[in-house]
Image 1 (cartoon, rainbow, N blue to C red):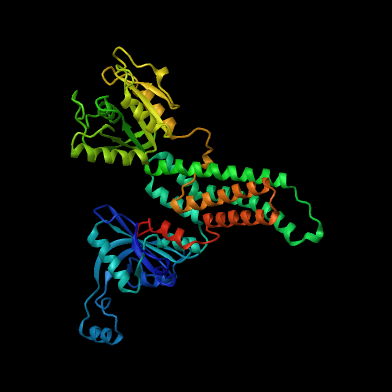
Image 2: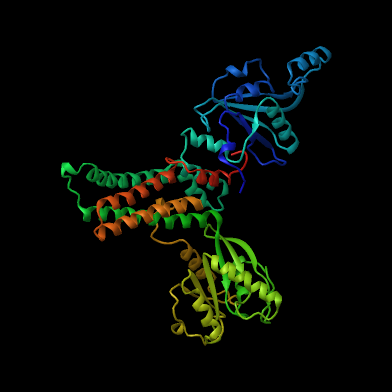
Length: 484
């Protein structure tokens, strides 16, 4: 994350930055936004046909060249005059370009915006940027263009998170959901929930402020409404976890005692010989990570050392890493050897994963089985019989992995991209409603209920950006790239 503070964002400045990757490519784009954007570009752009670029219509394209005038590197008026007298050289052509002029408020930032499309390449992009900055522009900070779109009302915080999620999408599903969030579907859902909560809050507020009017308030009805809103927020929290998986990839850890075939399973999922497989126990002495996709779902999958007693220092280090990943995993793929009965090591690991989302793999299914599934205690996840040698069970395993991570029963509209701080704000709002429902049930006066409802309402305002929190803003925009 980029380290900056909101005070560094000066809305009075005209900002500029490359909007494309700074390397060899067919095209490169530099974006400029602010009151002086068009004026700055007019001083470094020579149109093919004679025209005053300051007076062109909005949303128009113009062909010409970026030029470096002999005077453009001299900023003092006296020095300019002396230089003009001594040096009558023609401007130097830097590149052939198209410029797009978008006048505010009909632009991404709701300010005047100019985009310069040049040929790609670090040298030419850096030179054009240098000229723009030399004429009074300032290099944009991370996310500063989107920040201006937010503060000028073009988007809200949830839509800003949607933009970031589009840029970081690792799957088609993640991209589609992020686009819907940018469109405003998540914002609309939060607004509806907020209106429902506001209605209940207003009822309790009226009861407190106007007792002489004998306003009737049904505690049971309010509790029912509050609980319904609380459930909606819980579904959104669960949906935000799903969105995180779609955005970053689910962390899947393959675990089991030594020599049950974890590495063979790892290779089968990857469909390549990624790790060495041996009949000797303890072949894997470190954590090995790879990325794969199952049904459009991005996965970060880890082959690990057996979670048992270490034999030496290296194995001990590997087991420590395994435990760290184990605790943070979205899914555990627990491997058992079907040719052996459960032993104390298997039972030890079963106890470890009983509260985790897990898929059990009964490996070596092509051989005579001694493992009885009915004797496996405290395991509620799917069980898959598998054999790498006979290619048995791979499709069933992929289905089990996908279904375990992609929770059923979630409405598509409940899947919302939130950052860590936003999830905490949403959880705080939900917890305030839980508290309000409990206070009603325990017979507390409506004043206490009103306070809890007010806290929930304030947090929903922070989520959408109606109440701006500096911590949330810095967390969101610090993840953006410079040109966004």
